[in-house]
Image (cartoon, rainbow, N blue to C red):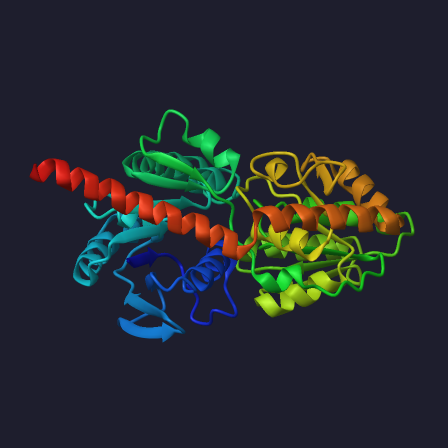
Length: 385
């Protein structure tokens, strides 16, 4: 079965940028182990001036030149036309689109599967960017129309399923994101002082509030270091954050690592005491999954998809992302108790083993492909009869 996976895919699979690329790498690597699947990855990037075809093991990777315009225009205009023409040429048995690539495959007659990684309209609304509400409204109209068109949708969280209620007309399949096996084999060296966060420094990720929570701990004389691993591309917000750190004299406690690769994230988690993510909008963050797989307790927001990942008081703590004192309280509890960190980390790893192993996720995804193809075959048979 030839499967076209249309997604954001990194130039270096060992250094994915963002959750969608990390998921794509983990899923594709696991799917490639099925001998009956011919995996064709199709991706675009603004840095591509011309289209090229290369390979990653048994996987063929088609890198298409950017057709021009913003992400929205690319996904719904010239980029969409280019993508559909290219997919028609390679003739897949099934198309599996991720994120905004689902807009590009909208309306195609080939059996289709679509994984929703985030709600762009929701992310935009809390982005703090200019004209956020207007842009959010436009994205909502476009996204909901795209969801309604999909015959098969992979829901990575019950939060996604809830958002699709009354909109999606296709079959919804509940499948978690996959985590690389390396995170399940983590040699923990926790010294009780390190809080790690793998997320872009942005308003949506709520970095300032997390920094303020760590400042509370430092003010109380608690030895703590917050290590922030993520993009620093939002120049205006990053400037605010750095200025805040300087004013609070937290340069020794707040470490900006910038964007780092999978191996470095794995290394950071090996020495992290707590993983913290206090975002305002998320579906199913890869950072939380990786931390759980590595046996690191999690402090995260009590909203959106995060409560479906972390069991409050069992594998971590859920907090109000706007309540600095509550965040500080939970971090303090974990940093002060070796036993609590150990027990929560162990429980988180047990949950991750059950839900996030790449081989299990790939097997379930393959079943969706088979179902999509069989459903289409049945429709064709009825039409020909």
